[in-house]
Amino acid sequence: MRRTLQLLSRRLQPTQVTAYKNDGFLRVRDARIGAQCLQNARQGLEDLLAKNATVKPEQLVSAHLSSDIKGSSISGVPAFLDLVKNDAIVDLAADVLDTDNLICWGCQVFCKLPGEGRAVPFHQDGQYWPIEPLETVTVWVALDDSDQD
Image (cartoon, rainbow, N blue to C red; front, top):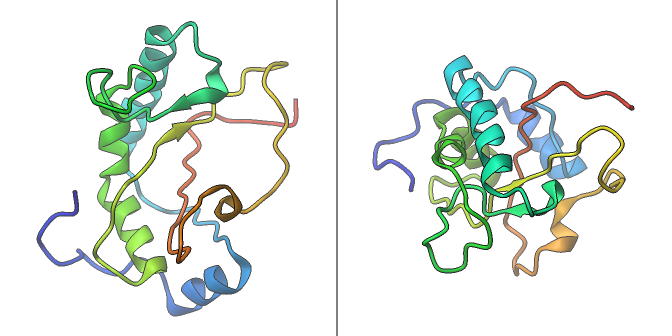
């Protein structure tokens, strides 16, 4: 998936990478994903929900895969594959993992409509993934505004 060219540029400062390694998370508010990519992902979310009306919104796993691909449990949409391949996201993941060799092994949509879905407390995703060594990163991209309600 990774383009064969070198990284466009490192996006994170060394202090940010150190903070990620120490704290297990990093908030990046200026990832510069691009307005069009985000708009496409927002529309992709609407399409994904419509195509998978019988699936609970918090169970939209493999949102980047089309339904004809082996292992796909839902009917995904191209917008999420585009989001996963976005240069800004790939570069941030490459920075924290200190490698240009990346594999996307999942793309899950957490869509929690008001008054629906289950509460998920703050956590680190590593405890959910059976990977040894645990050299993985989760990238969370907010497509909608949210509040405590």
